[in-house]
Image: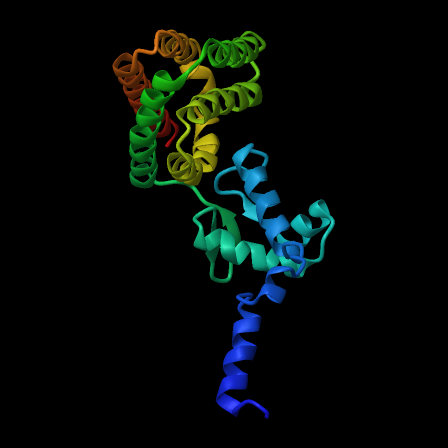
Length: 240
């Protein structure tokens, strides 16, 4: 006996939603090209290849990335939604320039999350974990000695990521991940002026984590991220 039309429709809709056993075995298609283009453009912004306020020309980006203009156009639309790009009528696309308010809000949230991650890391860290943090610290000192801005940005991100990994809290890591990419972008402005102070504070943080002193690690990270926030705002004001 054939199923009533309504039943067949429900079964078909269930299959399309991937709720059947057969649907669960389907091979996932690769992400659309526009996703790869989106990520590529974000990284060009984050690493300062594309500067704040810079005009983005579709055909130039397409040629640079080796794609057609269509995925670039689609990516730019999403980049505007996510706050990386400004689309101006009759003018085109421009790299977004963060306002003082949005930067302050993001850095405030980052401070809360990083402070909690430092507390958890100190509670869980093993000697091997601490040794890894010292290795990441040395990478930062090497970049500082070499006056390597890109190296400083990468090393700073790696050390903070190392602390978050020790925290062992996937929800915390997910939320920090939402702000970390944009923070790497901001950090270019202060990587050098923050330099020696930042890495001295990192060393104090690692010592607190090594001692499994959660309260001290939390306090050091709180002060560290607050000083970073203040210096960013001061540098931004001086630049404007």
